[in-house]
Length: 392
Image (tube, rainbow, N blue to C red):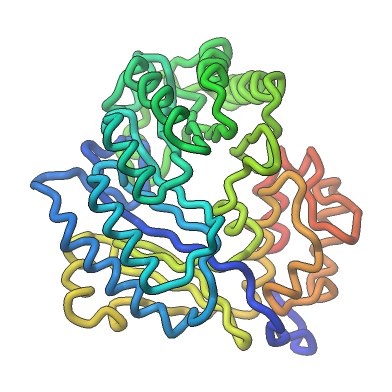
């Protein structure tokens, strides 16, 4: 988006909330639809060396965020639950020694049913994890096999049943529009998740990403766009009927207090440190905002962190003409949008600078007309890419 020279970003008077993302890149088996930075475990994991690298990575960020408390932590992957509970405890202890973590911080770890052990889950809780996100995707064994998952429905049910007894908050990840899936089958998956009584469910449409096996060779039986919409409608209807309110494109919670605080910080254009192989971060300064990134391959990342950690981190300021687009790309994923005051507070850009795009979005019926919020209309939610595109 082009900004008139008269409207360059103003310095930020305050900095947004700060989160910490930690990437653990290994999986027992890489799923054919996955385009995340994940790698199949081929040898025994050297947990100690990787944790040392993560801490070296964090230490390079300390001068850039000094004095700012951490509001949320998310340990993602890959499959972080392949690490031992002792390793996660060691990692979190080292982080606590270096940064202030808010007493009520949300600390999430991703887990897969294929790595489930009750004792390990208990160990994660004792280490400080207070929210577990379980990648179930489906409770149908045929569909799980079709998308390359290593667990079955029985293992998924067992992992969730243990998690809800151990953790304060549990999320279930579901995926729909799977090969040969019908609306009734997708709805049955949603109802199976609902029956466990978790307070948060994430429901994603299977997408065929470039540079993945499914992207190169799509599986047979992928629902066409009309069938996929029927499937999505069935999933959303089941969740709504059970009291789950959609608050983001793919996220549903039983109450506002149960929403994923870490992800909300992303969508509200908050800051986050990203450490680990391939991790990305966003850090605001009063004068500018920058993105950070690391080497994707674990061996390259480990070597870099053992020699010159700072040199291994790429830092790139966000260009002034991109700030509003990046802000909207996140904020408009939220069903309720964000206060319009967040735009100048978190980017230094005034709404007047993008008034033409705002007016166009409103005229097309994609953006709510309330000047106090940037909020997509129901039509805007359905055609989100078109809405976001107006600001890019």
